[in-house]
Length: 132
Image (cartoon, rainbow, N blue to C red; front, top):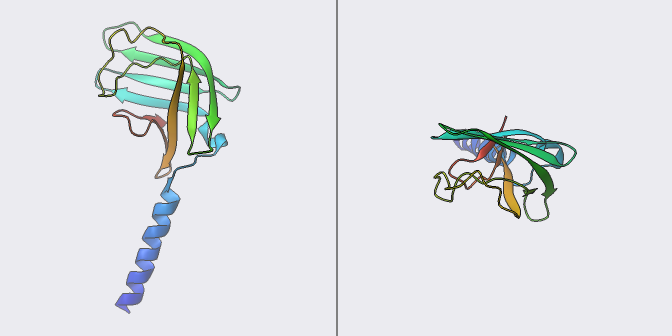
C-alpha cells in the first residue's frame, strides 16, 4: 500500500512541476505591468497591446525617468520580448549603471518564463521583472 501511495505522490509532484514551470508563455499572457525592485529603487514596465511600452525607473535621491518605446514578442526558441528604446538601469552584477538615465540606441531582448504560475521577465537577472 505504501508503494502505491508513493507512486501517486511522485506522479502528483511531477504533474505539479510541469504545470507550475513552463518555458513558453503565450502572447495573451505577456501584456500587462511588470515590476523589478532594487535595493536602490524600482522599475515598472508596462507592455501595451498595441506594441508600445512605458518604462518608469525610480532611483532613490534621483529624479524618476519615464521612457516610451516599442516591443514585440518571439516564441520560436523560448519566449522573448524585444524592446526598442528600453533604458537599462542595472548592470550584469546587479549594480546601478553609471549614466543609466541615457537612452542607448539598439534592441534589448529579455526572456519571459512562467514560474509557479507567475510570469517573470529577465529570469537570470539579479532583479527580474515580475508581472503584477
